[in-house]
Image (cartoon, rainbow, N blue to C red; front, side, top):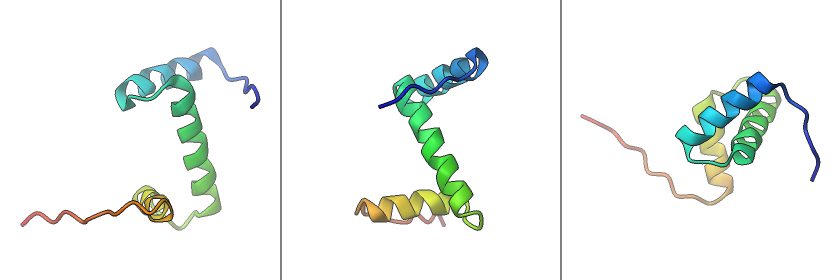
Length: 68
């Protein structure tokens, strides 16, 4: 494990987002880092497509909800 130096302003935004997303500050920062890496590696995919692919890889069964 390492230490990542970030600005106080970014840390505050991570803190606020972590409370909304019910994650620790570290977990929120890790989530944003991971999603950023995935987005850069897969520029043609949307956020939803990236999430769906991660869920498939974790063998999470996702059922599509269709409203009529």
